[in-house]
Image (spheres, rainbow, N blue to C red):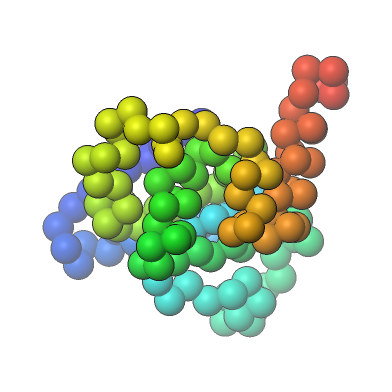
Length: 140
C-alpha cells in the first residue's frame, strides 16, 4: 500500500490536485475509489461532466466524515477497505484525534461483517471478492 500525503497552505489546491491527477486516473483504470470529499458528485455525474465513460469495474463510494457514525468508521478504514481501492481522505485532521493511537479496544481490528450495519451489502461483497482474489491459492 502506497501512501501519498499532499500538504500545503489553505487554498493551495491540494484536494483538487488529488482529484484531477490521482482520483480520476484511478476511476479510468476501473478501480474502486473511496473518499470523504465534501461535495463529490456521483460517478454518473462525473462521467457526464467529463464526457467520458469509466470502465464497468469503476466504483465511487462517498462517505462523509462529518457524521459522527461515519467519522468513527473512517478512523478504522483499514479494517474494511477492499484490496486495491484508491482511498482519498480529505481533511484527515478532522477524523483522527489523539485517541486513535491510544490502544483502545474500539480501534482493534474487526472482521468485515462487523460493519454490516453501516456499510452497504455490495461494498462488503466487493471486499470479500477482492480478499478471495488475493489468497495464495488463487494467485497465478
